[in-house]
Length: 130
Image 1 (cartoon, rainbow, N blue to C red):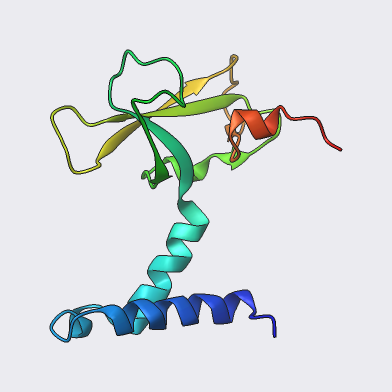
Image 2: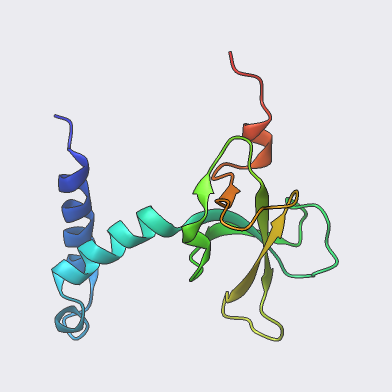
């Protein structure tokens, strides 16, 4: 049968918890893993991380595709007509996957106006609807 979203998070958390070593399992309670999965789902953004800040194409061979969680970025809501966008660049000299996100305005944004980004990639956003 169909697993409801709530049950899916619990099932994934249980699977991860069971895969941990006996030593690690007590340090990662099942409830914490469930919370982590929910947080990632609610706050992570699909992104391409440029290892070379001079790289222009988001899908260049220099890009790593993955998920990113940045402290303030989750405050921007989605719009199919966004007034801002973000890029991510590897943190200088780091090889651990750390990145820095930069938020750019696509036009002047008035004080008090909500900042919107697209949660989907530009190719999908600009594709014709069938």
